[in-house]
Amino acid sequence: MFTIGENAPPLPADLLGKMTRTETATIGHFRHHGFVDPAVASVLGDVRIAGSAVTVRIPGADSTLLHHALTLCGPADVLVIDRCGDTRHACWGGVVTAAAGLTGIAGAIIDGPATDIGEVMAAGFPLWCRGRSSLTTKFLELDSAVNVPVQIGGVAVAPGDGVFADYSGVVVVPRAEIEQVCDTALAMQDNELRVLERLRNGERLADISGAAERIARALASQ
Image (cartoon, rainbow, N blue to C red):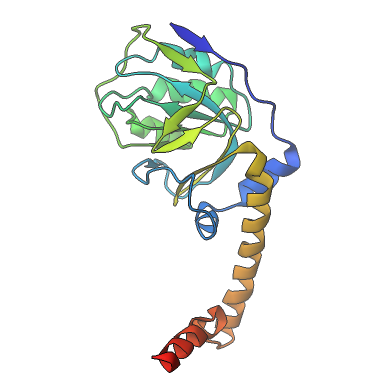
């Protein structure tokens, strides 16, 4: 059986701009959840994307619905693929990479392996996955779904959630919380630039961060 839900509304352009400037590691300084298993890693290396989740759930050796899901995607979408625990079959390869690139989507996150990694890299397509496999999926028409709640790397993802992905990892943020997360992270990134300038001017990191004061206080109370 196939289940096909509706796409979430597109993200506003100004919000998407904030998302693309937000680093996942900065989010990691103030949030504790939404962080995908780090084994789901960037194929291209140091690249950053952000966008709205288009979710796909395809089991085991089947990828029939994935090809259809690509027709539902557009710019600023991130394809998030739940493989239902399968870590052997590659649902993504060179042809799917070409098709995805032509849609203009921001990238794809797969909770499973991919194949034709050389073609993915040559195309410059932003892909995060669990390594590589030469065993590929087929058209088996198993129970699959698009635009339904899924799970990748231990994180629940709903259609339209915010997806942030870079060399450090992948973070999923519920749609209603995206702007607050971006504003907090971008303020921290601006502050980091000021910290780096203070370091270059000779100040010590422990003094800037407050670690020195905390340690002194702790020692005094021992």
